[in-house]
Each structure stands twice: as structure tokens, then as C-alpha cells.
Length: 225
Image (cartoon, rainbow, N blue to C red; front, top):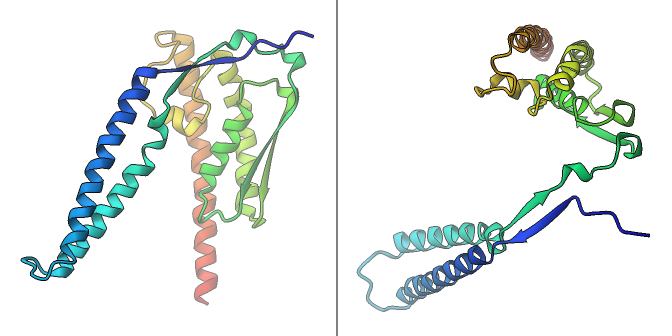
């Protein structure tokens, strides 16, 4: 049986690898000399500089060197990929997937942000009958339940809009806060539809935020009693 064609091909940029590794080598040598200089000063009998400022500078340099070292990981072996979306399976051959979203406290995890995550998952470019989105609220908050009801109402507008115009940014909060040109820019029908969806989103956001504020205020009053 023939193996399926890969969905992407990885390319290694050898020139970038050599340059990055040489840069890291010279930088490490310089850091080694610096550490030797700072450490050898501590063993001198006569010091022109007080010991405490020297130790503070030495500690900060060690910390910055460690942070720099952590940042070398993604530059050590840089690669690029060529993707082949045309090789994806047909919709009827794709496996079903479950998206599990967890939340616990609507005060620490803003409900509007959680609902935007839910809406983003629901709007994924995947067959609707094979996509299942679950929200687990460990705190059992009625605020989250109300947010889900509002999100379900808004999803009836948002998901068809994303599918019809092939929207790339499927998170409504990010989509309506970004200032960029749409693929359908200049299409009057699209602009009218986008304006209507934006109004629906603002109403959805207002309803969720209002319930969160009311719930937070009631909780604060109960704690003060």
C-alpha cells in the first residue's frame, strides 16, 4: 500500500544555521571572558570598587546571559515549511475531533474571552458534523452559563458569516478589533453584512459584560455583609 503524500515539507536553511551557530559561539566566548573577569575580581586583595555593587552587576549579567541562552533554542536549527493543503483528505474521510475548553472563575478568566474561544472553536474550517466543542466550567458559575447562551445566539450569525466569506481570523473579538483589509474589501454586500455582524457582536459583548458586572457586584456585597 502506497504511503500518503506528506502535508508539508521541511527545509533547513543551512546558511542561517552556520551564521547563528557562529554568533552563539563568539557570544559564549565573550560571556566566558566576562564571567572570568567578574569572578577573578572577587579574589583580589585590593578592590577599587565596593563588593556589593560588583556582586549585583555580576548577578544581573549572569541572569541576562541565561535569558540570552534560552533564546538561542529557536535559532539553533531554523527551518521553513512548504504546505500542501490540496493533499488534505476529503470532508467525508476526515476523522471527528473534539475541542475541550476549560474555565473555572469568571472573575479571573473573563467570560467574554472564554466565549470568544468557544466561538473560535465552533468556527473552525472543519465539517460541522465532525466537530464537537465542549466547555467545562469547574466553578459551575451561572455567569458562564449565561455567556454560553449568548454565544450560541451569536454563533448563528458568526459561523455562517465566516463560512460564506472564508474569514481567516475566526475569533470575533480579534476580527473586529483589527484594522486590516478584508479579502472582500470593496464588496458592498460584504461590507453591509460585516457591519450587521459587528453590531450583533457588540450586543453580545454588552449582554455578557453586563451580567458579569452585575454578578461581581452582588458577590462583593455578599462578602461585605
